[in-house]
Image (cartoon, rainbow, N blue to C red; front, side, top):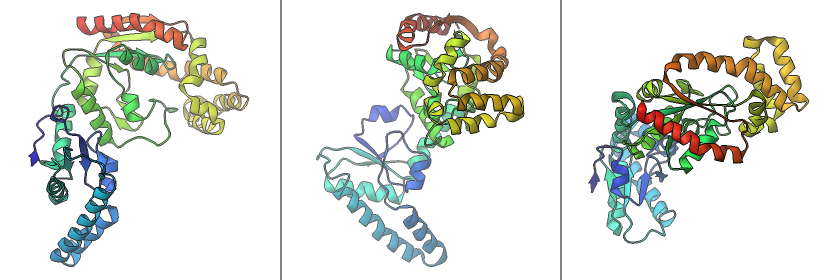
Amino acid sequence: MVYTLTSLNDLHRAGFDTLIDARSPAEYAEDRLPGAISLPVLDNDERAAVGTMYVQESRFGARKMGAALVLRNIAAHIDGPLADRPGGWRPLVYCWRGGQRSGTFGWLLREIGWRAETLEGGYQSFRRQVVADLYDRPIAGPLVVLAGMTCTAKTMLLHRLAGAGLQVLDLEGLARHRGSIFGGQAGGQPSQKAFESGIAMALARADPTRPVVVEAESSKVGDLIVPPSLWKAMCAAPRVEVTAPLATRAAFFPTAYPDLVADPAAFCALIGRLRRLHGAAQVAAWQAQVAEGDMEGVAAGLIAAHYDPRYAKSQARFAQNLRATVRLERLDPASLDAAVPTLAAHLLEAAHTG
C-alpha cells in the first residue's frame, strides 16, 4: 500500500505506529521525518558498492548484489529491532524517492502480516512540503516574539510558557545553539535541512488560531539560517521584552552557560575570538577574570561591552513592534515561575492586538 503526503499535518492524522527510514545512515543523519527510526536496507558502504558496480561494471550484477544485501539486512531488522512488533503493527516505510528500497521493505513486512505502507515519493515528498511551508508561503498562524538582552532567562521563560499551555517555537533548541559566539553546544548543530524539518513540524502541530511564541533571534542561529517565511513573520510580529538589572544578569550567567563555567580553558579560547572587536588588552583582562574564577565579573563585562550594544543596535529596527516590557529583579526559578502569568498575559494581548 502506498501513502500520499499532501501536508505535514497528514503525518499526525495518519496514525502510523512507526516511521521507518530505509535509507543509508548518512542520508538519515542529514535529515529524516521527525520521529523516524533508522533501519537501512543498505549501509553507507553497501550503497556505494552497489552504485559503483551499476555504473562501472554491470547493471544486472548490481541489482543481484543489491537484492542479496537488501534482503539480508531486512531479515536482520525483523529478527532484531522489529522482533517484538505485534500482528496489528502499522508502520510507514520510506526511502529517498519511494522506490525499490522502501518498496522491498514494505512488501516483505506485509507478507509477514503487518499493515505496512510506503511513502509515495519518499523523503523527497516530505522535503517538498517543508520547503513549501517555510519558503513558498506565509506562516499560517500569528507569531509573537519574546525579546530581551543576553542572560534575561528568555529560554527558560519560553519553556515555562510552554508548560503553562502557550504554543512556543524553540529555535535555539531545534538549532542546538544558544545564538551567540558562546552559544555552541556539545554534539554540534544539525544540518540546515534537519533544522528546517524541526521548525516545519513544530509549526504544523500548532493550532493556527492561537499565537506561537518565538524567542527573538537574528536571521541565523549559529551557522543555521532561519527560513525566509519564518524570518519575515518574526520581523513583522509584535514583541514583548524581558529586562533585568546588569548584576542580576551577570549572576545568571553560570546558569545560562554552565559548560563555559566548567571549562575555563575553552571559555578563554572563545573570548580570544573577540580580540578583533575589543582589543588585546580587554580580551586579556576578561581571560584573567576567567582564570581567577570571577565568572560574574567577566559576565558583567561581556554583557555590557559586547552583548548589550549589539542587541540594542539589532533591536532598534523592531522598536515599533514593542508592545510591553516585563522587568524582573531576580532570575531564580521561583521568580521565573512567578513571572509567567504576567508575561503570558502580555504576550497573548500583543498577539491579539497586533
